[in-house]
Length: 357
Image 1 (cartoon, helix red, strand yellow):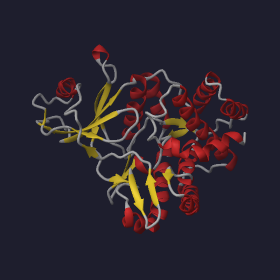
Image 2 (spheres, helix red, strand yellow):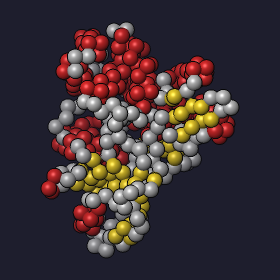
Image 3 (tube, helix red, strand yellow):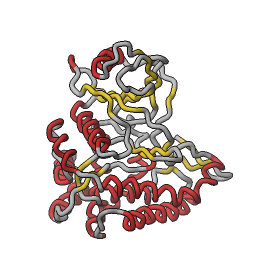
Image 4 (tube, helix red, strand yellow):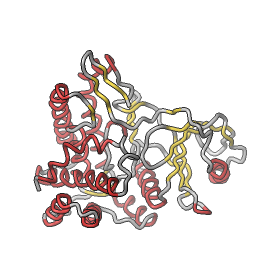
């Protein structure tokens, strides 16, 4: 966590760091098997790890390691990231999605090799290029954070709006075909809505169920389907001064562009910050301005106009997504294990969206 420390108040930014950190484990147990496959897939029989692997901090479902390699003869860069995932279906979805947007020239780390169904039932893995740059909100603390706020008020929403607009210009058809071959998950918002609705019934979560039933009864016309990220926020976008790179395609979808816009607007307007009550009001005003600038910038540069009713419908769906996860974790006794997730900090803002339904 980064902290903004003021003379009286402390603001904690609840975030996912991508920095490397010392680990009590020197390397993942799958490393030798991964290297064996990399040597074959990349035609590099002399490939080896040149330095001790460094585990990346953060992340809530996958394990990430930075590897520094030597002996590559197949175009593999010297520095790569190894992603290990316990859920093979989700790993296949994310890897396929990331590869698909990358093939269309979207700025995301190139997938170099993968094994999504390892022999013996081990974790699925993929190796991708290491992305340079820092998250849009990375490294902010103390006076540096305060000094950066005026710049962030424009750079942050504008960068996210451009990232969304560029993504929504991609052709969704090849990505849909690739996902259909690689996974058995349903593509599109209708499948997500049905899944959340069934979970709400299983969990006996009445406000959540009622809201989802209302959404299901008033689904928007499926008149527009684009490539969506589904989790476009400042810590999934890296910048180095010359380019931006987008990470983490776990929530990628082919859906209405409002699916992306609603999530990012919801998060920017209700940032996952822990702050003293007097400062919270100031943060809320600034956050709403940033969130509205994000929508206004997209309206100017984006490829598709968004109707306010469609945006509201998707905003409520995203609130249901957050509350479904929180309710599921609590029912399974996993709330403490996931306590660092931003959903907990956003709950006071999103839960009234359910009650209003």
